Structure formats: C-alpha cells, structure tokens
Amino acid sequence: MDWIFNLSALAIISLAIGVVVLIVALVSMLFGASFKIVFLRGLWFMLFPWLAWIYGTVVERNRFRTEKVEIASESVPAAFDGYRIVHISDMHLMSFAGREGALQRAVDKINALEPDMIAFTGDLVTMGPEELDGLQDILATLRAKDGVYSILGNHDYSEYRRHESQQAKREALETLKRREGEMGWRLLINENEAIVRGENKLSVIGVENISGNRSFRTYGDLQKALKGADGEYKVLLSHDPTHWRAEVVGKSDIDLTLSGHTHAMQISLLGWSPASLMYDEYRGLYSEGKQHLYVNVGLGQTAVNARFGAAPEITLITLKHK
View 1 (cartoon, rainbow, N blue to C red):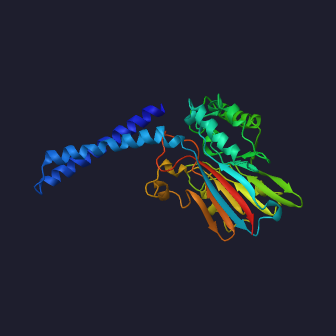
View 2 (view 1 turned 60 degrees about the vertical axis):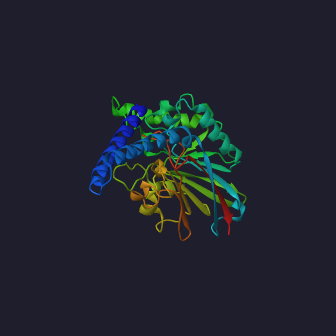
View 3 (view 1 turned 30 degrees about the vertical axis):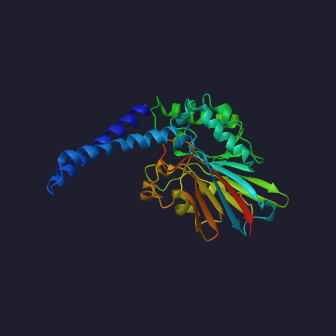
C-alpha cells in the first residue's frame, strides 16, 4: 500500500512539473525562444522527483547518522557528569518490514555508544503492534546501564486504522505495552522513575502523547507524571515537541525535554525543511534559560518511504556538570 501511495505521489508531482515546463515553454515563445527546445529540455526536470525518491529509499533512509550533543548545566549533579543518554524516536516499524538487517545495524550503532540510558520518544509502530513481528527480538538486544525508557506516540494508539470496536482498539494498545515490556523496555505512562548515583538523583519522566496541535489527540497528564519526581536533574520524554512551549518551558522545573514526532518531514534542502512551517521546534537542540529541548528526526518513515537531507538519527546526549 505504501508503494502505491509513493508511486502515485511521484506521478502527480512529475505531472505538475510537466505543466510548469509547458507554461514556461509557451511564455518563452514570446521572447523568441524555440518552444520545442525549451519544452524538451525542461522535461528533464520531471525526472528529479524519481531520482530523489530512489536515492532517499535506497541510500539515505539506510544511512543512520549519530548526532553528538553536550549539555552543560549547573543543574547536572556532579555524580552525573558525563552521563550518556542515547535518544531515539519514531521507528515506525512498518517501514522496517523486510529490512531487518537495517534495524540490526541501527541497534548495533546504539549499543556501540555504550549509553547509560536509552530514551525512546514514541511511535514504535505506525498502524498496530503486529509490526513488531520479526523485529521484537532485535529491539530486545538494545542495552544501556540504566535501561531503555520509552513513551507512547500518537501512532502507538492505533488511531490510523479501522477497528471492529473500541475494545479491539484498546486491546491493540495493551498488546503493544505488553510487548515493549517483553523487550525489557520500561514504558512510562504519566509516571517517573529515579536513577540514583550516590547521593544524587536524576528523574526520568514520561508522559503519554500531549500535543498543541488539534490534529493529534492528547492523552498525557504532566502533573500526574511529575508527582514524586524529586531528582536534582529532570529529563522529560514527551513525543510531540509542541508540548514544550505549551506546558514545560517557563512553567516547570524540567531541565531537559526529549521529543520526536516531526521527522523534519523527512526532507531538508540546504538546511531548510517544510517542517519549519508547522513547528517552531522541529529538529535539533533548543534552549531557553536553563531549559533545553532536543527534537530527534526519527529512525523510520511514514507515508513516503524515503528521506532526503534528513537521514535517520541516533542522538548521543552527554550531560556535563557546569
């Protein structure tokens, strides 16, 4: 089904380019140019979407890059100086169907970073928990000293498929939760856990999906998740980065928020992404005062099974005591 959508979209884009070329050729005639020459040369532009898609499908979506970020703050306890968090997001395992080797390479790269903690910020699947079939054992090999923490993204609720009943939809979500537990992941549902180093403590806080965009449902409860979170340094896992401005920055004592969701729309040209038209924060590190947000562009894909200028990302965040 994804392939049909991709090919149809490419055909429509190419047709649109063809119409533009036709108009340019007609206008060129008014300035004495040859319609035939301008039109035939312009038709080469119709190949660009296809070549970009082939590159994005065959090359870039399989090129897992590691971004290294250092966050220095006086809020980081001395015992957590040098603490290594690997942040990953948006696997959309449907996009790894038949690409088990690619997922294994991503897992191997993550493990090679020897993280203290792995934080996964939602959208493990696109449509339903059956996407874990054949991939669950690979993900179960992710390793970190303090474990793998995860949250739910908007796709994890199986919102985008038809269910026979609301009960069937709830069962799909419960199945996903159970299977994450079987992988050894700690799924945080509006709750927090403490990581202790000597007399110092880091709080890992996880919320269900909270969005400032009405197109995506909100299930999370930040205040509930914060109850009992008394670490000197607080790390929030929240899938949608719009939550940061809506409820976190300037309104809480959360030091670092980790998000995903945007994928940077899987395309970036000369540093510009159409995601910037929808999100104030859509990729990379953002800071206001002592509070930070990092938006990871994800490992998988939705809709278009390609990436161009926005390769799948593994982020290594090192905390430094300032």
